[in-house]
Image (cartoon, rainbow, N blue to C red; front, side, top):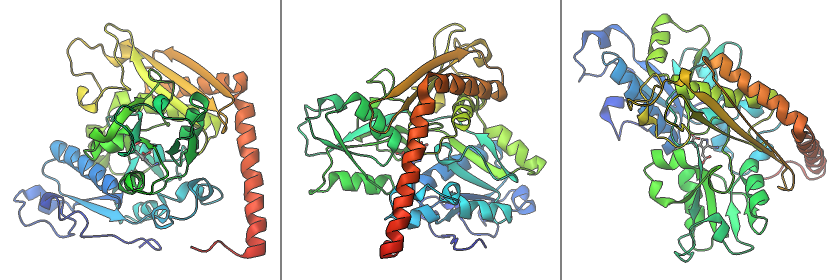
Length: 411
Ligand SMILES: NCc1[nH]cc(CCC(=O)O)c1CC(=O)O
């Protein structure tokens, strides 16, 4: 067992008896295969959203391989335990990348899990060498969304309509920086916790926030789409989302079995894989972490009728990522459009670039991302990113000095 990891065996058994987490073969199953093969152990974080996502993946696996059985294993991540340290600080230093995934990954390496379901957005661009992203699944709505305080008059429905001085809650530098650039009259504050906690902080009677920004995908998966007042995108305002936002990824051992490869092939989405790999190729080349303000937006264009991946729900595509509607062209006939935006933390400086080309593989998509990264750097993103990493170093040094004087921060 990985250090500190705790599997919560009860967490999923209440909602769906078929996703039981018992380790013995379920008695209600009468297929011979289920007794022949051990269950597939699906690792996930423990939040409500994470478990909904894991069940969604389980449902897709069941559709493709109905004779197999599946156990969802919710594990408490280090990042979920620490609710006090600001996210930017948590995501710095040596252990930065393993904050959300370290314990799950240790269990995957030791064979205690067969796969991990992640939000692709939370995954580092570089994985440990013995692990890999085995599949990227059909993407949910990748846009950011504005959720407003129930105390605001109902005539206010957009960010731009908020009165000067209104405070927006978000812990994402990208979201705060992008919105500062567009709406300098607003203020920003940190809001942490899972989706439910954040909504609770917004709705509380003494809340400082007029609104918060969340990923539309999470809200939709949780059935809370109704709380969305405004979708933020290139076509509304000029806000771009995080790399990989809205897509789920399956992490497996790099040397996984042929059976596992078959399962991954059955649930992956080629269209989403190409779009996300372009975004991740870009991020990797810019050497940005999750706290660097890089916004992206991908869509598909041409080859017949125009078609946007970004704003389309996943069900419009089959499992290979081909548009289901007959008239939609195959992605190989289309151009992948990559819009990008790098913003300084205070929102005063920014560099934008958009590029499009046909990409016939995930590797070609990655190349598009890397080419765009180089152009962004030439256009001044290098200065913005250098300033951010310089500021981080200063902040870290100050923190060290403070700890030296006062001892570590108390919880
Ligand atoms: N940083 C946390 C996180 N990671 C993924 C999602 C949303 C779901 C997704 O992007 O797939 C969220 C919450 C949010 O940003 O509102």
